[in-house]
Length: 480
Image (tube, rainbow, N blue to C red; front, side):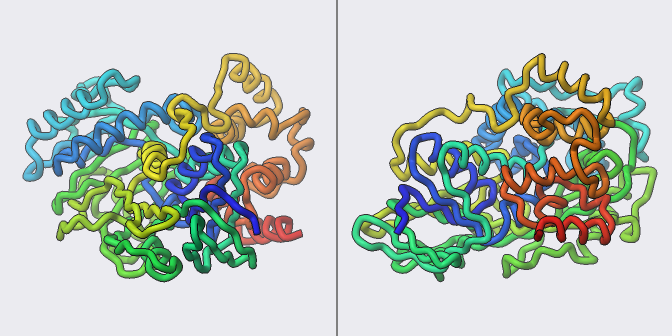
């Protein structure tokens, strides 16, 4: 029977961040994920690293401050994945007064302290590209946050964990666990039985199912509420790489964000759900998001324009709020009071604060040997001047759009992926949309991809451009 210091259930952003930090501290780690990494909630976000401007309304100042600090860390440690993004905030009569919004942005700047991003300001008459798509072009404000490929951030945390000795077991479900003296004894869907000195339940929307149905003798009670957030993708609505944050009559805000070059990502909704598998955007949600952008943009959007939609279920800590948009997005770590080996359950959290969550979780579990992850690059994040020069040489034979996509996805690891190739032919078979065999092999061998969907929707977003025949050909290759 294999033995580990830590068994982590769940391969989302929280589970992989904990695995990375624990492995860097020298702990032996097994992460078990029943599907693919980032298969659910952690690939279904708004793709932002942000402080949470709207959280200020609910006086969650600590969460905003921590999120802004974590935003700065991610900009520094994963600069290939996390990039600055300018937001334009149009004023809407009858909602939040202009002075309230301006004060909120001033406080947002203040809480970021000496962050690297530019401060908020009014949009002037000369900023025509920012105004052009909008119906109402007066009283516009702008501020800066950051964008991220959420699923790749999750995967790279797992890659970093594995490189420090962690075992990442995808398609492996925890069937049961029980305390046995000083350790947990766990049975996995792979047929294995393992022991662990501590157990972390980071199963996201299935945190209650794991806590109450898979772990014998757990004393804690899951205080969780499930909340679905849906997004839609349409053809690009404006020129430029800036985004918009749109106030809605119900008090929510909706983001409209440039996405994958030729698209616009619009989201999100807040819909209470009962089951973790309710991950389809409904017709009502799609209409809501279309109407949200139609209030502001000259170009109108209808449901027939949607080229892709997705939804994720967030496991929020139940703080008693009746209004879904007012429920805290802060995380809550619950240490089971039962005797024997420790059990920690993770509720809530968001992409931005996963690193801080991991640090606190391991401190709560008493895992020694802390090495600060705040100054450690995620794989590929160690950008340096010679790498930029190498990218220029790469562009001599590789299409610039492909160089850009690969560099943003893999950072400096792109050198290893490309190897000695000096032409597209050297990268092997072209599966379509610029996905070559060399990249597929890398994703299979280095990043835990096992199926075509793992590659097309989580390691990349090339599923937007693939035909059914191309997807089938890729799946045959993966299964060969």
